[in-house]
Image 1 (cartoon, rainbow, N blue to C red):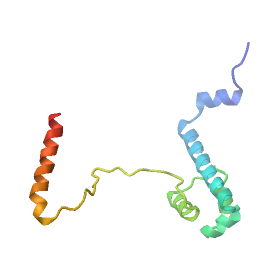
Image 2 (cartoon, rainbow, N blue to C red):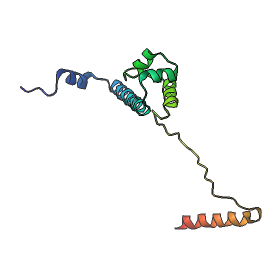
Image 3 (tube, one colour):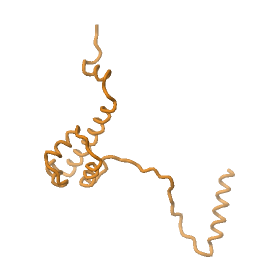
Image 4 (tube, one colour):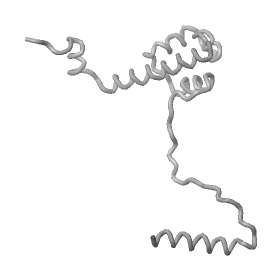
Length: 124
C-alpha cells in the first residue's frame, strides 16, 4: 500500500485552517518585502529598530513572519522604509477630470458643443 504525501501534510489537508494558512502566507510575504527593503537600504534589523524607535527584540520578532503585525506597525514600517507593504486601492464613486478652462463668453457655446457630442455618441 502506497501512502500519498506525509502524515503532517495529510493532517493539514484534513484539519488545517485556511484562515491560518492565509494569515501565515500574508505575514511571510510582508516579512519578505521588509527584508528586501532592508537589503536595498543596506540596513540590519538593528537599524530598522532604531528608525522605528523600537527594541531590537521586538523588530526581530516582527521579522520572523509569525508575529501579528498591527496596521499601525505596518504603516510605521512603510513610512520608515518608503514603500507600500500592503496595497489597497480606495473605492472611487466619483472621479473628477480636469478638461480645461472655458472663457466667460464661450461658456454657453461650449456647453452646447459638449451636449451635442454626448448625444451623438449615444446615438452611435
